[in-house]
Image 1 (cartoon, rainbow, N blue to C red):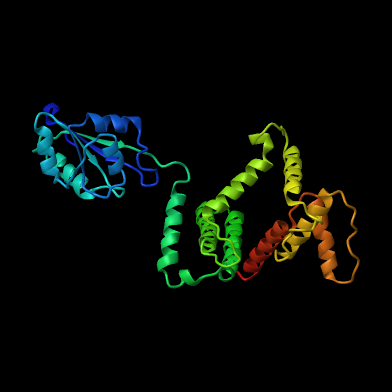
Image 2: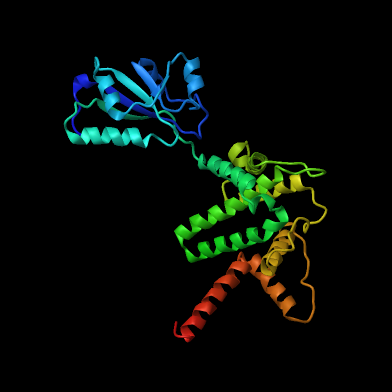
Length: 324
């Protein structure tokens, strides 16, 4: 932009994040608002207005054109603060940029002042709001049940694993989003539970996993210590056992998971409990595969991942034989 004129005043475009609770502005933002010669806002429903009023900051709800705003600032070198909407005011900013670029107008100092900043994870709030609206207004989505969506959770998880194994970072980011969508979708459906099913929300889901993580990491959030991954695993299993109170080490192992992963999980549970359980004898390749899976798990190899890697190599060999 062109050079500003000292006596032409100052325009401050104050932006706020709709993901931060109204009223939680930075110290610099509050000081600027209190010291300004005038505060303008084009949105009568802006969430910050009640808090500014409570703090004694007078706001004029109007939408001045860029040239009018510049002329007002020039009256005695005034400082005017424009409280932007969540989406910003492109018309005003474009107009100011045009005036500044013309070189024919004595421009006030132009300043962009973020009044609040998004915290890490703030976009998750957007996802929850978008999901709420889709659930209400989309003819397909509002009819879905947990049972309807179960297959998609599996598909998205497999696609995520593919992205990890392919080393594709862009694909990884997208597939993580698809998995996250499944979590938010199921939680949104659960809010509407009736009858004997008690409803719960995404906050209940997040709160539950937060409590679980803190409980199982006393070496991070408590007084216990763990210097090695092995010690961490020991604490995790102990804390998990305290909370689950299972009758059998096999309780809670999902039988619907891929067979090799199922065998490895069972082997891990048995080994963790220091049980000596021989592999069942029987004819057929199934028992041979079970023995291989248990051996791989005992040696620290994920049999599911190992077989997937081998299968990918076999696929590449097939494509090579086909001349592809």
